[in-house]
Length: 80
Image 1 (cartoon, rainbow, N blue to C red):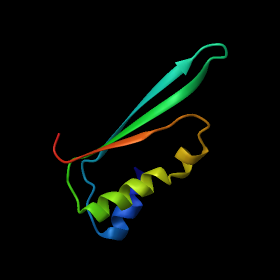
Image 2: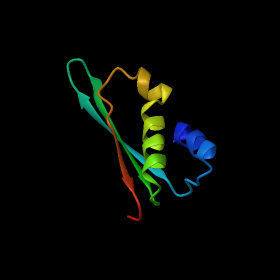
Image 3: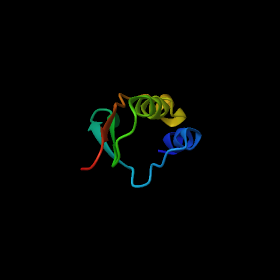
Image 4: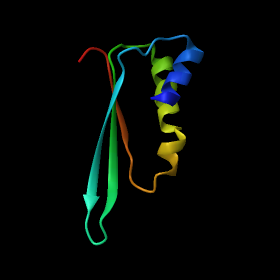
């Protein structure tokens, strides 16, 4: 969300109300996280170019990139 916020600021758009939910999937032997799923909900719809740039920013997140697990990020745009 922080990286998306930086991108939003550079595009002069408002992400107020955006949220992220995170789920982890555990494995045993050895006990470890095998998957982290992130779902980003943005309660507004933006121009296609802006949405693409925001999604690209989320996927470029340094924390996301250092995780050594499957970590998909999904998005929903518009009112829930």
